[in-house]
Image (cartoon, rainbow, N blue to C red; front, side, top):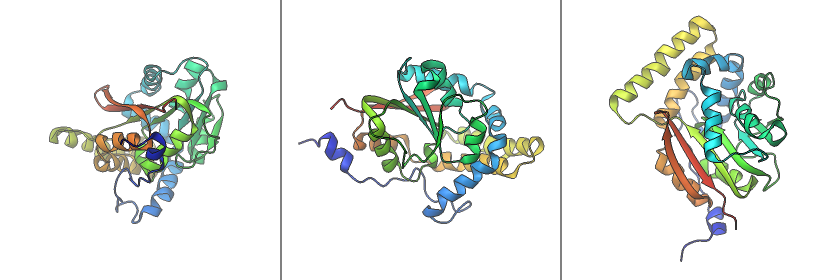
Length: 257
Protein backbone atom coordinates (compact mmCIF):
# COMPACT_ATOMS: atom_id res chain seq x y z
CA UNK A 1 0.00 0.00 0.00
CA UNK A 2 1.39 3.42 -0.94
CA UNK A 3 2.04 5.78 2.01
CA UNK A 4 -0.38 8.63 2.59
CA UNK A 5 0.71 12.24 2.36
CA UNK A 6 0.77 12.47 6.16
CA UNK A 7 2.93 9.35 6.43
CA UNK A 8 5.30 10.80 3.85
CA UNK A 9 5.52 14.14 5.65
CA UNK A 10 6.25 12.50 8.99
CA UNK A 11 9.24 10.57 7.61
CA UNK A 12 12.47 12.06 8.89
CA UNK A 13 14.78 12.95 6.03
CA UNK A 14 18.32 14.15 6.68
CA UNK A 15 19.83 15.32 3.40
CA UNK A 16 22.36 18.17 3.39
CA UNK A 17 22.57 19.83 -0.04
CA UNK A 18 26.32 19.18 -0.13
CA UNK A 19 28.98 17.67 2.13
CA UNK A 20 31.09 19.66 4.57
CA UNK A 21 33.42 21.96 2.61
CA UNK A 22 36.60 21.87 4.65
CA UNK A 23 38.14 24.86 2.92
CA UNK A 24 35.47 27.06 4.52
CA UNK A 25 34.31 25.26 7.69
CA UNK A 26 35.12 21.91 9.30
CA UNK A 27 31.83 20.72 10.85
CA UNK A 28 28.16 20.77 9.76
CA UNK A 29 27.21 22.98 12.72
CA UNK A 30 29.68 25.64 11.49
CA UNK A 31 27.98 26.01 8.10
CA UNK A 32 25.28 28.43 9.22
CA UNK A 33 27.70 30.81 10.94
CA UNK A 34 30.09 30.80 7.98
CA UNK A 35 27.34 31.48 5.45
CA UNK A 36 25.84 34.25 7.61
CA UNK A 37 29.19 36.01 7.99
CA UNK A 38 29.93 35.65 4.28
CA UNK A 39 26.67 37.21 3.13
CA UNK A 40 26.76 39.95 5.78
CA UNK A 41 30.29 40.81 4.67
CA UNK A 42 29.49 41.14 0.98
CA UNK A 43 25.91 42.45 1.21
CA UNK A 44 26.89 45.97 0.19
CA UNK A 45 28.35 44.64 -3.08
CA UNK A 46 26.02 41.71 -3.73
CA UNK A 47 23.89 43.35 -6.41
CA UNK A 48 26.96 44.32 -8.40
CA UNK A 49 28.32 40.79 -8.05
CA UNK A 50 24.97 39.53 -9.33
CA UNK A 51 25.18 41.82 -12.34
CA UNK A 52 28.54 40.23 -13.18
CA UNK A 53 26.83 36.84 -13.15
CA UNK A 54 23.65 37.58 -15.08
CA UNK A 55 24.46 40.87 -16.88
CA UNK A 56 21.54 42.61 -15.21
CA UNK A 57 18.85 40.12 -16.24
CA UNK A 58 18.30 38.71 -12.74
CA UNK A 59 15.08 40.50 -11.85
CA UNK A 60 13.55 39.81 -15.27
CA UNK A 61 14.08 36.04 -15.32
CA UNK A 62 13.03 35.68 -11.68
CA UNK A 63 9.76 37.46 -12.47
CA UNK A 64 9.35 35.27 -15.57
CA UNK A 65 9.89 32.12 -13.48
CA UNK A 66 7.24 33.21 -10.98
CA UNK A 67 4.72 33.80 -13.75
CA UNK A 68 5.39 30.43 -15.36
CA UNK A 69 5.04 28.76 -11.96
CA UNK A 70 1.54 30.20 -11.72
CA UNK A 71 1.83 33.35 -9.61
CA UNK A 72 -1.06 35.67 -10.32
CA UNK A 73 -2.40 38.98 -9.03
CA UNK A 74 -3.89 38.66 -5.54
CA UNK A 75 -1.98 35.51 -4.58
CA UNK A 76 0.23 35.55 -1.45
CA UNK A 77 3.93 34.86 -2.05
CA UNK A 78 6.69 34.06 0.45
CA UNK A 79 10.18 34.59 -0.98
CA UNK A 80 12.65 32.55 1.10
CA UNK A 81 16.34 33.57 1.19
CA UNK A 82 15.27 36.84 -0.40
CA UNK A 83 18.79 38.29 -0.33
CA UNK A 84 18.77 41.79 -1.75
CA UNK A 85 15.21 41.28 -2.99
CA UNK A 86 15.37 40.55 -6.72
CA UNK A 87 12.81 37.75 -6.61
CA UNK A 88 10.75 39.56 -3.98
CA UNK A 89 10.50 42.55 -6.30
CA UNK A 90 9.50 40.26 -9.16
CA UNK A 91 6.67 38.98 -6.98
CA UNK A 92 5.57 42.52 -6.15
CA UNK A 93 5.44 43.33 -9.87
CA UNK A 94 2.96 40.48 -10.36
CA UNK A 95 0.79 40.33 -7.25
CA UNK A 96 1.31 43.62 -5.39
CA UNK A 97 3.39 44.58 -2.39
CA UNK A 98 0.61 43.80 0.09
CA UNK A 99 0.71 40.12 -0.95
CA UNK A 100 4.47 39.46 -0.81
CA UNK A 101 6.82 38.80 2.12
CA UNK A 102 10.58 38.32 1.87
CA UNK A 103 12.54 36.40 4.50
CA UNK A 104 16.32 36.04 4.85
CA UNK A 105 18.72 35.10 7.68
CA UNK A 106 21.28 37.82 6.84
CA UNK A 107 20.73 41.21 8.44
CA UNK A 108 23.15 42.74 5.96
CA UNK A 109 21.27 41.41 2.95
CA UNK A 110 17.93 42.57 4.37
CA UNK A 111 19.42 46.02 4.87
CA UNK A 112 20.28 46.18 1.18
CA UNK A 113 16.89 44.77 0.18
CA UNK A 114 15.06 47.49 2.12
CA UNK A 115 16.59 50.09 -0.22
CA UNK A 116 14.52 48.76 -3.13
CA UNK A 117 11.80 46.42 -1.84
CA UNK A 118 8.42 47.89 -0.86
CA UNK A 119 7.04 44.60 0.53
CA UNK A 120 7.59 43.48 4.16
CA UNK A 121 10.96 41.88 4.93
CA UNK A 122 11.51 39.53 7.85
CA UNK A 123 14.61 37.94 9.30
CA UNK A 124 14.34 34.16 9.40
CA UNK A 125 15.73 30.84 8.17
CA UNK A 126 14.29 28.37 5.68
CA UNK A 127 14.28 25.57 8.25
CA UNK A 128 12.35 27.63 10.85
CA UNK A 129 10.04 30.03 9.02
CA UNK A 130 8.40 32.56 11.38
CA UNK A 131 4.91 32.26 9.87
CA UNK A 132 1.72 30.39 10.72
CA UNK A 133 0.76 27.29 8.76
CA UNK A 134 -1.16 27.41 5.47
CA UNK A 135 -0.68 31.14 4.95
CA UNK A 136 0.80 31.43 1.44
CA UNK A 137 -0.28 30.47 -2.10
CA UNK A 138 3.29 30.20 -3.39
CA UNK A 139 6.83 29.98 -2.02
CA UNK A 140 9.90 30.94 -4.03
CA UNK A 141 13.62 30.47 -3.44
CA UNK A 142 16.24 31.81 -5.82
CA UNK A 143 19.69 30.19 -5.90
CA UNK A 144 19.90 29.50 -2.17
CA UNK A 145 18.88 25.87 -1.77
CA UNK A 146 22.58 24.97 -1.54
CA UNK A 147 22.86 26.98 1.67
CA UNK A 148 20.19 25.30 3.81
CA UNK A 149 21.50 22.78 6.38
CA UNK A 150 18.99 20.05 5.50
CA UNK A 151 16.69 19.66 2.51
CA UNK A 152 14.15 17.59 4.40
CA UNK A 153 13.69 20.11 7.20
CA UNK A 154 13.43 23.01 4.75
CA UNK A 155 10.91 21.26 2.52
CA UNK A 156 8.75 20.30 5.49
CA UNK A 157 8.64 23.96 6.47
CA UNK A 158 7.73 24.92 2.90
CA UNK A 159 4.91 22.35 2.95
CA UNK A 160 3.67 23.66 6.31
CA UNK A 161 3.30 27.32 5.38
CA UNK A 162 1.63 26.67 2.00
CA UNK A 163 -2.12 26.50 1.64
CA UNK A 164 -3.50 23.24 0.21
CA UNK A 165 -2.93 23.53 -3.52
CA UNK A 166 -0.06 25.99 -2.97
CA UNK A 167 3.07 25.76 -5.12
CA UNK A 168 6.81 26.17 -4.75
CA UNK A 169 9.33 27.40 -7.32
CA UNK A 170 13.01 26.81 -6.57
CA UNK A 171 15.74 28.17 -8.85
CA UNK A 172 19.20 26.61 -8.77
CA UNK A 173 22.41 26.56 -10.77
CA UNK A 174 23.19 22.94 -11.74
CA UNK A 175 26.60 21.35 -12.00
CA UNK A 176 27.59 21.31 -15.69
CA UNK A 177 27.39 17.83 -17.15
CA UNK A 178 30.45 17.95 -19.43
CA UNK A 179 34.10 18.21 -18.46
CA UNK A 180 34.51 21.35 -20.57
CA UNK A 181 31.40 22.89 -19.02
CA UNK A 182 32.70 22.26 -15.50
CA UNK A 183 36.11 23.70 -16.41
CA UNK A 184 34.51 26.79 -17.97
CA UNK A 185 32.14 27.53 -15.07
CA UNK A 186 34.79 26.75 -12.45
CA UNK A 187 37.25 29.12 -14.14
CA UNK A 188 34.58 31.81 -14.33
CA UNK A 189 33.61 31.51 -10.65
CA UNK A 190 37.01 30.85 -9.08
CA UNK A 191 39.27 33.01 -11.22
CA UNK A 192 37.55 35.58 -13.43
CA UNK A 193 34.78 36.77 -11.06
CA UNK A 194 37.05 36.97 -7.96
CA UNK A 195 39.55 38.98 -10.04
CA UNK A 196 36.80 41.34 -11.20
CA UNK A 197 35.53 41.66 -7.62
CA UNK A 198 39.03 42.37 -6.34
CA UNK A 199 39.72 45.21 -8.76
CA UNK A 200 36.16 46.60 -8.61
CA UNK A 201 35.13 46.32 -4.95
CA UNK A 202 38.30 45.45 -3.01
CA UNK A 203 36.03 43.35 -0.81
CA UNK A 204 37.38 39.99 0.34
CA UNK A 205 33.98 38.42 1.20
CA UNK A 206 32.75 39.20 -2.34
CA UNK A 207 35.79 37.42 -3.76
CA UNK A 208 35.35 34.46 -1.43
CA UNK A 209 31.64 34.25 -2.26
CA UNK A 210 32.35 33.45 -5.90
CA UNK A 211 34.71 30.63 -4.97
CA UNK A 212 32.25 29.30 -2.41
CA UNK A 213 29.45 29.41 -4.99
CA UNK A 214 31.35 27.15 -7.34
CA UNK A 215 32.19 24.62 -4.64
CA UNK A 216 28.55 24.42 -3.53
CA UNK A 217 27.47 23.99 -7.17
CA UNK A 218 30.14 21.36 -7.84
CA UNK A 219 29.39 19.38 -4.66
CA UNK A 220 25.59 19.77 -4.63
CA UNK A 221 23.46 16.64 -4.52
CA UNK A 222 22.08 15.68 -7.97
CA UNK A 223 18.67 16.95 -9.09
CA UNK A 224 17.22 13.46 -8.64
CA UNK A 225 17.88 13.71 -4.90
CA UNK A 226 16.13 17.07 -4.62
CA UNK A 227 13.12 15.73 -6.52
CA UNK A 228 13.01 12.62 -4.34
CA UNK A 229 13.06 14.63 -1.09
CA UNK A 230 10.27 16.87 -2.39
CA UNK A 231 8.14 13.80 -3.11
CA UNK A 232 8.97 12.21 0.22
CA UNK A 233 7.92 15.39 1.99
CA UNK A 234 4.45 15.01 0.48
CA UNK A 235 4.58 17.33 -2.54
CA UNK A 236 2.93 16.23 -5.77
CA UNK A 237 3.31 17.33 -9.40
CA UNK A 238 7.06 17.54 -8.73
CA UNK A 239 8.91 18.71 -11.84
CA UNK A 240 12.32 19.89 -13.00
CA UNK A 241 12.78 22.14 -16.01
CA UNK A 242 16.07 23.47 -17.40
CA UNK A 243 15.76 27.10 -18.50
CA UNK A 244 18.16 29.71 -19.86
CA UNK A 245 20.73 26.90 -20.39
CA UNK A 246 22.12 27.15 -16.86
CA UNK A 247 19.14 27.33 -14.47
CA UNK A 248 17.19 24.46 -12.95
CA UNK A 249 13.60 25.25 -11.98
CA UNK A 250 12.02 22.88 -9.47
CA UNK A 251 8.26 23.17 -9.05
CA UNK A 252 5.91 21.20 -6.80
CA UNK A 253 2.42 21.45 -5.30
CA UNK A 254 0.99 20.81 -1.85
CA UNK A 255 -1.97 18.44 -2.32
CA UNK A 256 -5.48 19.77 -1.73
CA UNK A 257 -6.01 17.08 0.95
